[in-house]
Length: 335
Ligand code: LMR
Image 1 (cartoon, rainbow, N blue to C red):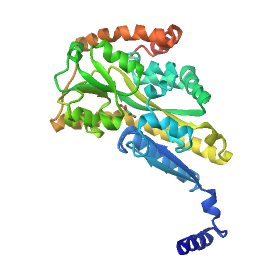
Image 2: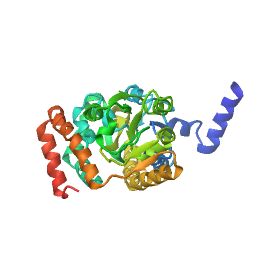
Image 3: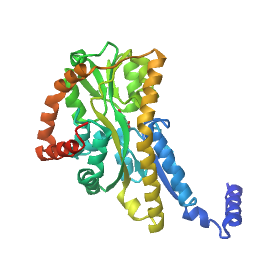
Image 4: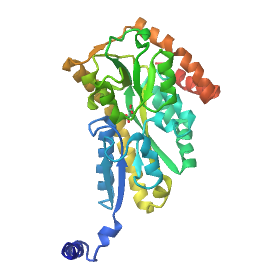
């Protein structure tokens, strides 16, 4: 045991002039998430690592743990609270399940017609106010990262909303997505992302929803015969850290990490659409999942079928909030 330790001290001395000075200074930031490294979130996390380590010249070491390697989605917030990880990027729906109902707005079907309208709401007072609310739980919401609009999939053709009736579907932990599936006559079941493939493969569940990037990287397309580009709901992330950890960082390091995060956010939001377009194209080319593309009239039928969910949502998140969002959306012309 002794030799390697001594070796480390000598090596450290050679590098820094003072034994272990470097080792003492290095701050380790563990970033845990549930998608694979080649998703928009996974790539943005790696980008953040590269920028953070570069800008701080190695004073910060970012360890990224993708694909639920470290924690599954139901365990992530607890791990963050306990300091077992320092950064997460859960879906906005999963944030709402912490008790912040207003985050459910992002899961309301067809509320946001375009990415531009989402970005407007996230960058404005509504989005900033939502992130602020996380402080009451000891967390700090520091950015929104984009993924994309969701497609539906199943082992039978899906074209009209009625095709969802009776299907057992995997959903992420989100009350609003649960309500959406029930409105379609489907039977939702909450499962961690890393359990979805097996549930679909074994036939325990019939269908699911996600943006193409997740459908592809979690290999769900291999065990789903049909999909449809409903684009019925949005999937994005809140980048969250532990407030105490963040506040206790040396001020200069914190400033550099904020810069790294701003850069990673710009990157995440720039790559997400192309990543999802590419994933959908690969899924289609694979021939494993047949992807239906809705006409305007067909999409209207999905909108109508899901309109009652918007009404129900008002009761949960407040009519004023929905009105304020509709106002923001209308400024951009409603898509
Ligand atoms: C899920 O379905 O659980 C995902 O959308 C998770 C994620 O982080 O993208």
